[in-house]
Amino acid sequence: MSSETVNVDDFKELAKQALPRMYYDYYAGREDRGTDMFKALALGAQAVLGKISYEPVNVEDFRELARLALPKMYYDFYAGGAEDEHTLRENIQAFQRITIRPRILVDVSQIDTSTTILGHRISTPILVAPTAAHKLAFHEGELATARATAAAKTIMVLSYSSTCSIEEVASSCNAVRFFQLYIFRRRDISRQLVERAERFGYKAIVLTADTPRLGRREADIKNKMIAIPEKNLEGLISIDVGCDRGSKFEAFANKTLDASLRWEDIEWLRSITTLPILIKGILTHEDATKAVEAGVDGIIVSNHGARQLDFAPATVSVLEEVVHAVKGKVPVLLDGGVRRGTDVFKALALGAHAVLIGRPVLFGLAAKGEEGVRKVLEMLKNELETSMALSGCPCVKDITRSHVRTHYDKLQSML
Image 1 (cartoon, rainbow, N blue to C red):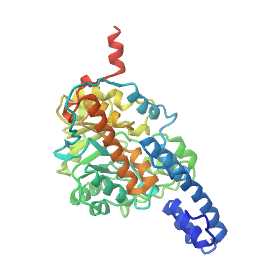
Image 2: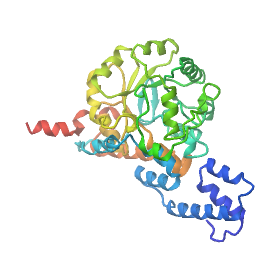
Image 3: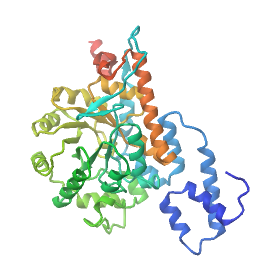
Image 4: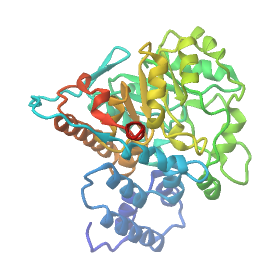
């Protein structure tokens, strides 16, 4: 940044670099906005850009960069959890209680992190989870995330509440991607979303089943979180909920999503698509068993990033319970709390076929756009490679249950 900024155009350029596009367009489009306003914005921009000039070396660094770069409302929306955020913290801490049991004198001169999910070969067992409203982080939104994911040769799950449409993301690059679905009270809306996803080449439907109503996300209530412009719903339903207090996002979800959804409705979803169906939100062996009986093609162990029910269990703490219930009949994936390659390794050792990451992608996008998402995915892959090499596992299938020791293992050994 030049220290000799002296006119409004220079200040505008600085502001443009630091502000989300929505905010910049608002200020830049007003005739009464002059040099003083842009100078104030630019000074803030320079302060932020100065703080984020270093290169991040891990996911936590990207979180801090995102916190500096985003308006508080948006950062809290991405980073926050439900109520007291116990489960939000526990998702990460549960991984930290698992130790790795490395093996030595194994030929690890070549490490292969590739795996297969629903018949699709990917470079690493790390998928991009469905998360809402990427344009709040970066002006290209999900298009940038899709390109970065494609470059990493893995799979992106597009959120139904994306700020780029199903069609726009499909045309952004050539890649395998899945589509996340919620069931609306108006079933015709869900049907149309599924039909569009199938028509534009998405390879699976990920049914999020843990949201009969939105969890109480108190940061969003305090911030009066805006209703997100949901591109996929344009022409189908209005996002104007007429709510003057609390989170407009929560009000929209609670007004439109179907709280009567039951296991029998999996059959309805199966009747309107030929795509494989994964169910997201499983946390117990009872529901895992029912999911297999309902004929789903995969299970995602998830507590919705700790944004729904506080004091629900950390996902990695119930992963084995679900894996044992499924008995190998369908692939089991996990999201929630993955911040290191060692976390990926631990999840694979406990029986997951792959993990999904949400917040790390958003943090990378907010900090450095498409390049940031690429770096986050590359970091985690490199960390996984290191974990595999130092644990004596040349490829993913070599990672076994004997490579980790959980809190429960330690308790059993004391009996």
